[in-house]
Length: 263
Length: 151
Image 1 (cartoon, rainbow over the protein chains, first blue to last red):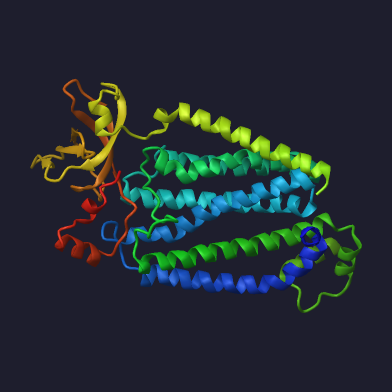
Image 2: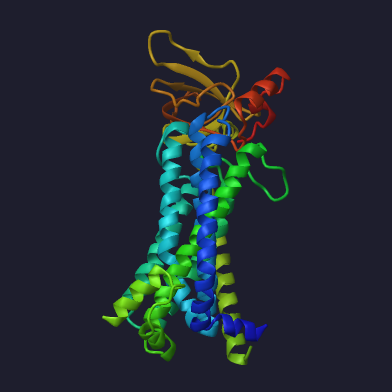
């Protein structure tokens, strides 16, 4: 298991394998996103109470789920950085944070747009909304801390520490609607119970959630590959990669990075 | 995994655990302040301050909505199925406002135990269904909102 762990943590190995995965994940992302949007807009029936405005859920819920998953992944990467000092985890930490911040922002904005017609207000300081806003600030904190420190490994360690400290916010977001009175409704989906939503409403949601994860995968791989090329530009394999003419299998990102380095 | 890694792993785990415990204690201590609103039962038990801006939440009791014909003035009862509270309001209500709907009202509790609201927000529950299903449930005598009187 440890040899696998070390193999996975080698930037060169990751660069090569992710190049092969990328087109497949990208295709799947486009496919799921298109299917999910069509299902959400055309196939799902309107809600008995909220009418069509409930459809914003198909963006709001996946982005809120992904915002929290991203944070957990970032914290796990942070733990690996602090314990094993693995370079690839340092890069992952740096690459996840901006995407996490954007998706959290998307969840907050779509929540406001949904809230206005249903609740009658854009924003209310209830436990769910506030803890989500704190999540956004945690992401900003990780980004700011990393860009404030000039050495790459020092920046990663500082960011990791904040990412781990902020981990406590995740269960607070999850259970805020159960522990306290909030304007936000409790969870529709629970592991132990049947969802309080018919199948034609939750199936588009499931597709959209998978689509969002795939988009995250694509963005993470693209960002990581760029980061690897930048951090490893002095190693032999990257030099070789830049000097050899670009093969047909390489992606546009490689091309731009390669030309940047070459110039 | 060598000794150094093991030591760091333990430090990270203990650190996260201690910090989580501290956060849990803080949240427990602030419990009352994090709640967005008081329930009618809390108001009846005298937990809510009088003449201070507070929020009250509950279901709009069936058959309790009384409107004045030539103004926006409205009076209704908010209930948590144990206690209830009369709410006065004179502004625009959200679309989702109806009998049996969960709401959160901001305003002041007056000396007579009535609630003078300055803002009423609708709270929707975790149940979603197409209109046909809701109609069917109503016909069966089990109104959607009665089936899950949760707030």
